[in-house]
Image 1 (spheres, rainbow, N blue to C red):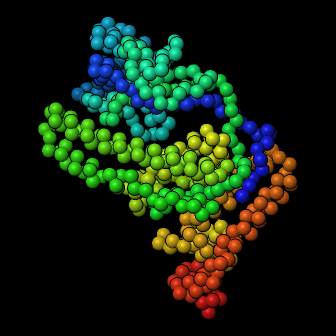
Image 2 (tube, rainbow, N blue to C red):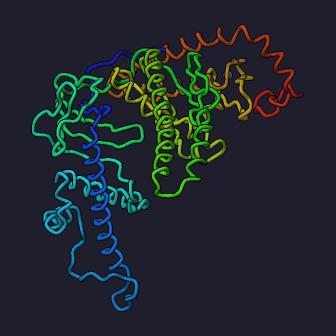
Image 3 (cartoon, rainbow, N blue to C red):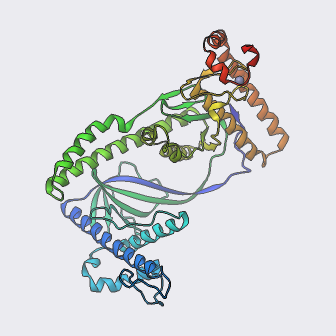
Length: 454
Ligand SMILES: [Zn+2]
């Protein structure tokens, strides 16, 4: 299927910011220092959160019936501890607690910023109040500003830490400026997420060229409207046997002992391994899909709701939401359009003649009693998503173009595809009739062929 080639009329620009992840190899003393900083950040985070919580609980009850036993009372004119106030308190706190001064000041400030971002997020959503962080729970620190480029060929210069060995496996592209660096601690090692920015503005891709619909699922990880399927993958399921063993070993260890820490690291490493494997697979799959088409349409389903139902564990294991985000990113980088379309009832509609064909989850074959179109269930669903994508995004691009011409060519393209799709179904027509005779159950459910039942 082809949509109109991109025109210059409706180009919207996006700023260029990339986050590249690299492995860090700090030496022994640097690891010690980083761990100390993380702990200091955790303490200051908890202190700031305590102040916030005290302020909130001191203003909870009516002024004439405070419970003196439990409420910590702050003066009525004490202002709400906002970000600016808590950040301005830091210099005074450093004089009182000298260990705070060991950490770069901007790292502490962004740490407070992080708490207030969490509070703002809580306010906008209505749930998810930030919690105190336990020992070892602070995993990352942010260096928000650099005067000059801290990167050399194999080292990165971080404030107060010195030169740290880095594996720059992916070179920073020309014309990009390094903005900030986040250092992350994981069981597998230390990582640096480097944010780079460029002033160059490139147009966001618009629907064009060969279009495909992509339907994701558990039985086949994804199916395209061209008839290509990728078998389902279970990342957690294949690795959880070892995880089980490690977790059982951990449960036998004495808490806070050295052996407990060793066992805990092994469990964390296994979790890291599963997550890295999944992400790697999804990136490769996204590139494969971008090789196949110029415009890709995916369903706009909320996978969190899908994960709450039947086969929830496997849905979470597949990581469909993450895959959709990765596909969008890869598509954007490669100039391919990735758009979301309405997912409702996409598996219950015949992509060929667009009538409703009811199917249960166990019916793996799509067979339309009206036009006798027969194909795999997932592929039919992907074809329907593709139809919807073309309809949705043609309408948006129509506004900028000369109306009638686009409608005509669009119809022509759809008709051409339909006529192209029928030969696919045609050779199977003979079989289809037989199958229809054999499985009378499916016929009863389908709304149309009532005359055949008579
Ligand atoms: Zn049909």
